[in-house]
Image 1 (tube, rainbow, N blue to C red):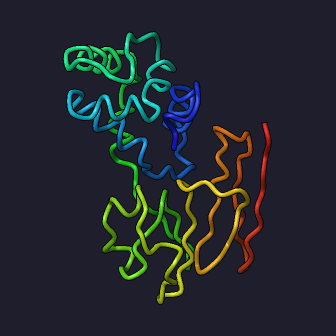
Image 2 (tube, rainbow, N blue to C red):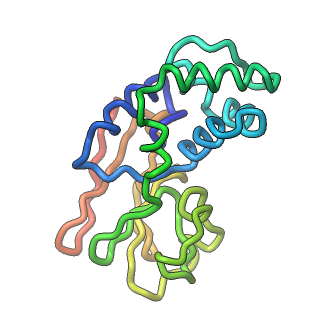
Image 3 (cartoon, rainbow, N blue to C red):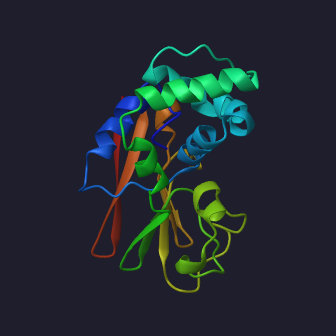
Length: 189
C-alpha cells in the first residue's frame, strides 16, 4: 500500500511516480483511492474509514470525517484532483497487479492457487483469496505478498509473506531472492 498507511502518502506517491526503475504494483488501498476519485459519493466514506482521511491530509487540509455527505465528498474529490500532481491518477490506474521473474511472482495480497497467473481475478490479487497460503500451487510458483500482517516474515507452502505492518509496528520487511534462497531484510523506525 502506497497510500492510507501513515501521514506521508503524497510523498510516497511523488517518489514512486518518478521512478522508472521500480515496479510498483496495484494494492487494495490504491484501488479504494481510485474508486473515490471516480465515484466519490459511493466509495468516499468507505475509503475515509480505511485510511483515506490520512491520505487526504497528506495532500493538504480537507474538511472530512469518517462519514460525509455526498456533496462534501464530491468537493473533496475535486480539491484532491487539483492538488495531486498531473498524471498520478493515470499512473495509479495503470499499475500492474502482478510481476513475475522466473518461478517467483509478486502480488499485493494473494492469488488463487488453482488458476494460472494470467487468469487471476483482480480481486484475488489485491484483496486475497481464501485458499491462498492454505493450498499449494501445482505449477511450482512461489508467490511473494504483503497485505496480510505477520509477526515475522515467513516462507511456507509456496508463499512468502513479508508484511510486518510497518505503518503500525515500525518494522519494514523485504525479501531478497537469489539463487533459490530467500533472505529477509528488515528495517525498524
